[in-house]
Image (cartoon, rainbow, N blue to C red):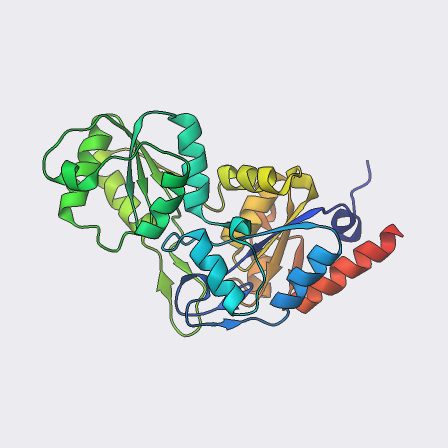
Length: 292
C-alpha cells in the first residue's frame, strides 16, 4: 500500500487545531498576555476558514477562561469565537463529567479554570470547607494552574488521594514558549508533589493526551486523520497528533527548533516543519490546488 505524500495528507484535512503560545502569539504570559502576534498567524486562520475547513485554537494554560482568552486574541486581531478556544480545563470538565457524572471532584486552579466545570455542572468540592476539616467523598483530584497551592491544599488533596481518589493534571509540561524568559509550568509541579506524598500516579488531560485529541475531534466534527495539529512544541502538539492519527505540524517560532524535529524520536516527529505561518498557508494552497 502506497504511503500518502504530505500534499495528499493536507488535501484531506478538513479541520485545523492551532496552538496559541509560540504558534499564533509570543509573550511572557499565557495565551498572549502582553505579547505580540506572530508572523502569518492572522492570515493562516483566515485562509483555513476561507478554504472551508473548521478551526479551533488550544492553549495548555488554565489560568484564564476560554471566553477571556478569545477576547484577548480578538483584541490582537486574531479572530476566534469563544467556543473555538480550548484549554485543558475544557477537556478536563468534559472528561470528568462523563466519568464521574454526579460524584464530587476536587479541583485546584484559578476562577478562570473553574468556569468550565461550572458550565458543565461538575459536582465540585468546596475547598474552603475541606480545608476547615469538613469531609468529602472525593472521587478525583484535578490540578491546574494554582499559584496559591500551599500546605493546606496539599493536605486535603493528599487525604483524598490516599482515600482512593484518582489524580488528574491539566499539563505536566515543564515550561512553555515565551518572549523574553522561561515560563515554568505549575500544574505538573504540583501533581508531581502529590504523586510523591500519595503514591497515586497522575493522568494528564491537556495536550498531548488522547483525551484532548478526542475532544478536539468531536468539536471539529472530523476524525483525527482529517485534522492538522500545528504548534511549536514537539512533545505536546506533534506527539498528540502522531499518537492520535492526525497530521502533525511544527512551527519553529516557539519551543522546538527544526534541529529538534530532525533529531526527535520517529514516533513523535512532525510531518511538516515551517518557520512561520505564511509557509503553512503555502503548503495548504499547494494541497488545495492539487485537489482541483
